[in-house]
Each structure stands twice: as structure tokens, then as C-alpha cells.
Length: 347
Image (cartoon, rainbow, N blue to C red):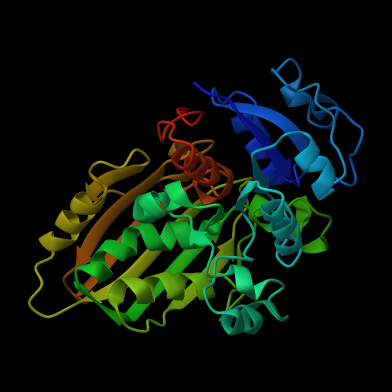
């Protein structure tokens, strides 16, 4: 297998660490650059002892300078940076001939005005929005394969979109009745000092946050609207739970009149029967985060509540895996003609 010279920009956070875990042993990757302002000059294995003796772990962190990254011969870069910061680096690396897989929110939205509404500042590179491909591999594998700028989806959106998109495409549910409730582990907030994320604040506790207009709503509604062929507005209620990593989501919607409940299972099977990383649990299946932890799988089950006429969609994923680093590597594989499962066959 050809090895692609690869960089990770922002490699010292939780998502960056997950990318390192996956890429250090990926058969098609030669890791040539990993950046961190705080850890520059230190070997990867010194900052993350878990990688000690992993091939390539002697590589030292470097400053996130586009010229220096390009000088390593990198052909592709993963950006694990905050929104608003990633766009500038993305543009610089694209100008230097690299392909970019961005894990921030900077290129997920098609409309710069929507970005400003949800993220509170003007988009830093609106001219690149039409160039970016929303990197949901189960939906856009062909365009991802040809892209030079991939916007990898958020963790919450992945957990909501994959179960719901087939139902909207086949017009099985009333999209005006959609309500999504998600629960996420604490690593979803990033690797940073924050009083609200201290152990004693999160342990033995659960709380809602970002209500009623969490930032991820923007990309969720964008992708649901594309599938439905009309504007979709939903209620989304995220919660923080005392897990290191993992997301479980329950989404409900009214079944449209005349639609048999069995159509739900048929739509999901039609969409994902051949998908490498979507595991369908069928009617009555209730996904569990422990079964997807440290993998790139998303498990999906469903049920129909005859009393209320509502479909219940249930999903579980690792927010650092299928919700972030794993999904980005899945796009990387598509972009370079590798098997979709390359570097991701862990259970």
C-alpha cells in the first residue's frame, strides 16, 4: 500500500490524540508532521506516553507554520483546531498544494451568514465554502474521494443525521416534529481547563447545555434540509454525562399518515446494508456506548410507538471516533483510494 505523507495540525488535544492513535499504525500513512504550540520540540511519546514504541512516535511536535508543514513533504493535513482558527491554516495549506481534512466547524456550512449567526463572528474564509465537501462518508463518498477540502462533521450531527437522513429522503416522517436528545461524554468539550468540566463537577451528575440553540444545529438542519428538499427546523437537546467519551442519541418524529412502521427498517437497510461502519440493530435494538467505544462504528436501532405515532431512532458512537478522528480517517481513505476500513478495523 502506498504511504501518504501526512500532517496533523493541532495534535495535542483529545481529537488530535485520537488521530495520532489511528494514523501512527495506519498502513497507508507516513506521519511527517504533528503540530502544537504548547508542546513544540517534544517527541510525541513524551507528551503521550501511551504511544511509546509505536512506529513514528519519536517524531517531535512542531509549530503550526504552513511553510514548515509543507517543507516536510506532507500531501494531506488533518486540522484538529478550534473553529475560526482552522480556516486560516486551511487556506495556507491548500495554497501550498496539500489536501485538507478539517475537523473544526469552519467549512461545514454552505452559508456564511448561518455560520455568523451560530458562531458569533464573520466567516474567516467565505470564498472556500463552495470548495468544501461535507465529509459524511455514508452519504458523500464519491465527492469526498475527489475533494481537496473536506469538512468532517461534528459528533452530535453524525449521531443524528445517519439514522434520520434515510427517513427524510424517503419522506416517511413529518420533519416538523423531529426532536433529538443527545448525551455526550466530557471529552466532547475538548482538552482544556474549564471549571464546569472538572471531575468533581461532572462525576455523578448529568445536565443539559447549549439549549435551545446549540451550534451543531446549524449543520444538522442544513443536511436534513438537503435530504428533505425543503427547510427543516428541529429541536435539539444536548446533555453532558459522566463518561470520558461516547454519545448516545434518541431522535423522535411523527410517522406520516399511511406509512407502515416497517418502512423505517427497510429505509435504514437500504441506506446502510453495505456500509462498513454502520451497524443496524433492527427494531427494538438499543445501542450502548460501551459497544462503540474506541471504534469507528455507529450502532443504530429503532422502534415505533403506536400510542403516539412517533418513530424512535436510537444511535451510539464514540465522539472521538466516528464523531471525529475515525470519521476523518474514513474520508482520508476514500480520498486516497484505500479500503474504507484501512487503519480503522478495531473492535
